[in-house]
Length: 382
Ligand code: DGY
Image (cartoon, helix red, strand yellow):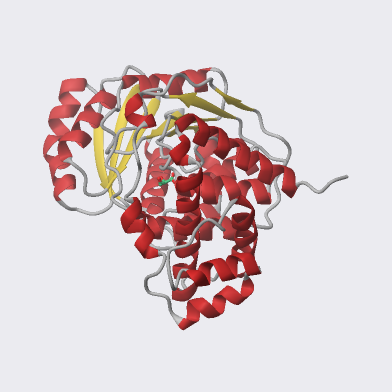
């Protein structure tokens, strides 16, 4: 049987309660666990509805607060790791599912699809779904890029949504993650990177199941909303550099289907507001750090002090900038964090203007071939 976990912060309580009810009604599920980041209004709403949902569905619904486990900023990682520990000590279930609590398109088929992947014998099942061509910019420009440059021969760069919060772990996977000190330390947004990396490093097989309707959820307003996620995901990647992987893992990806217009036509962020970020708030410290970068990147970035410039930040320049960041970036240093954000914003605007605006299909093909190109570059010629 399976435990389904929803980590949550402040969300629309109606959406969260609906998702809890859907999970509790699923025949494969014998426990639903809601893990709140703090005791606020959404937590109170779940507490108030808990007994009713349990008795309506005949499935226990437990509500707990996340523990302080890790050593980074207390965040999503502490919530997910709290759930892993609870699963091992309080249940004897074989499988644990995670879903973001704010998905408005959640349904029983999300659970069924993951169960099917585990029935096929896979250790980890990951959901993936279509995302707008200007969404997923940390996934593409940081996580898939980093996996391609650092472990080009592995399955890591081929994983569709390595930052995805919708996944299933079988019990041995949960045991391995709880026993892994580095995973337990990762209390912040870096947790998804650590889960993806560590499950592949430990040799667990991966099945990726395709959810065609996509994940409708609360979206960010502008790229600034993603700053701390970007810094924490990049820092997590940098912290893994130098790690060795074992042998090949079994990895299967379900075929995709036609993508709904609501996704292909959507623009993920406010381009005008984001363009202004390029010229704002430069400090002498940030200008000084540009000395580490090759001339194309350094001069291009410096031109932004006068007017927005982004065409220089193509996939080649981003490759070179990324390598410098992997070597020199200092997590927690205000200048480096501001510069990382600025470089990434420049790359995202370049991609938006030169690729995403040519249409959804072109953009998807481009992103896939960008990662494949990075993989080829990272493997030394014989
Ligand atoms: C990503 O890049 O996947 C983040 O969720 C932001 O969209």
